[in-house]
Image 1 (cartoon, helix red, strand yellow):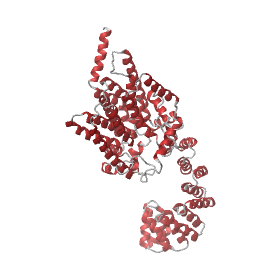
Image 2: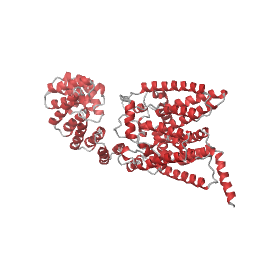
Image 3: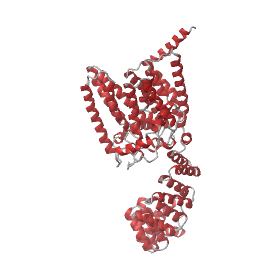
Image 4: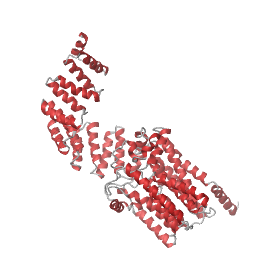
Length: 637
């Protein structure tokens, strides 16, 4: 076979693929990511939505999703720290939960389908931007197999980014058509564009940045600028959608009490350099991490790539309007993800956040290469693009395994980002669930090593020592670290008191710490109740009742306070008063064995046969032995 014929056959093969670009893109995505259908949960947000929120993620709750923040489905009713308003994400979760409740595969199936659809729509988007069909196809294919997007596809919580990308692309496509179409069809395109814009916005907040991008396209790329009336119509519609969105969002979440501009500026100062971390992962995706902390970022390589790209764009005079459009797309969709309420807190440059911004950088690369079309008869193009696609496919297939199970996930997270605080915390919680207490403590201690002012970490270590390892001395030490971090931590003060009282039986130190708790909050029901218990145990019934009464004033259903109020009266022979408090406790906790026994004894003392028999029967049904004296009483009556 001659070289000419071989080249013709190669090109014919590629031309045949180009006649079915959507089918090819869809098939490649399915082949690459099919195995995620066998993956479970990684216990990093996903287990919350799939397991904990199963009772809330119902189709009937869809209206409620638009009235609450995204984590409302997990029982987050305070929403003080939840600033994410993404109702459509919960709609998708509700559909998944309805089809296969608590099953990870259905969520992964939706993630796979969304990625395949987004890749196909991206091809159409490139065509609308007037790129050649071969260029559009190859770069949509590169996007579909890019390793940096694995987290957006294989991690269940990445669905919001996929939806934002899909609907943003569709909205842009139909806006382009609306501006370019004939009068008869542009109304249809207009309404589809608005619907997709709204869907993108309700999928992820950053989608609002699509509006300035569309304005950029209209004034600097669009060749039909005479349709300014159509733009004006669209502009007012955008305002309407944005206003409606922000009204709903403001009702759903509590806005942080910070100056947004100041917070954004401070966030960009500390997180802005992570742009270069992202650049490295996009162009050299060998150091991927599911939980990459800011402290583990390596900037020099990314900075070098960034500088080289800028240099060659200028040198080759490829800073075109389209390249600027792509760069703007990348920046406006990525930079808002750098904003955090507390810029000094730990920050994590999650890779799923690149799912939408990456499209802009792909446009920049297309413009940089200045390809009018891709010719597979050209050896450099054929082997160059083939090498990139094969390499990306293999890396993506390999990296996707990271999301197969929680232990693989956290092993990769800690190996690739050894200073990632939330990786250690998440791993610690996983070990705790599996009752691996010593290993869990080690994980939390590593977190404490990198963030020594985290109340949750010190508190969690103390709780494990106290409740799971029966080591109150170590627990007290860690609770005191918590108290040192936050001197007004009522939980730490009460917990130290509990450790002294319930585990070490040191009432003197317990009283000191319960008193410390009451200095912080004089109405703390637990400190008051336990002080009452201590004084009742010392026979100081009047003093005990003083604290127990205050505890019941704070919470009339506090079971410990009700029980011990009854005990103080019983000890003084005032059985009728004791019964009053026992009955109040029984109303709230009818299964409590102590209440049943005490009520049985009290009614026996009051010679109330019917009530004695009732509680004796309940007490014995629970597998307990009724005292011989009471059994005799019941038999003789």
